[in-house]
Length: 214
Image 1 (cartoon, one colour):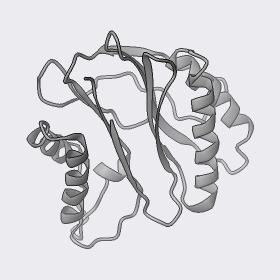
Image 2 (cartoon, one colour):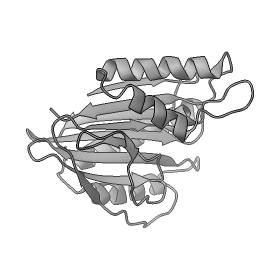
Image 3 (cartoon, one colour):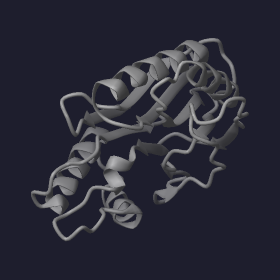
């Protein structure tokens, strides 16, 4: 597993996390808080803490987000919200149970095939609607399979001609480099985004996480 984050400002609102729930279950998460600066960063810390605390209770991902959403809605005076993706991987069986709260769909490379966007049911953003119930979905990984999580700072990176880096450019680049080491893929992609931006300001945090089942 490998992850990077490049904030657009000194204080960012994105976060990634990965941690063992027990000896055989690994949680991975990426999220993006609305807004910028200190308020977003503080809300990010709260969201990250709530997700990790609830995940360690061995609840299903959908149950985790249902609870986290309720807590965030109750203490959200600033009117912020979070898009987030959480997966819990059974390291023995390769089963991945996950939930999506309005976040970008991950890229998955399964069965030795190329990366594709994970077809998934996306729930509502966190902290946006009190009482919302999130559903748990699942897919299967085998040894050598990979999953790539990211925030919209990747696909919405813009060049001086106001063109977006975009979903298809990301997919093509990931497939071209899909056999490289995880660290090389993420650092290489970050360089590719910089070349594409061609000096344009980075307007959003760029956060990426990649996991390979071994």
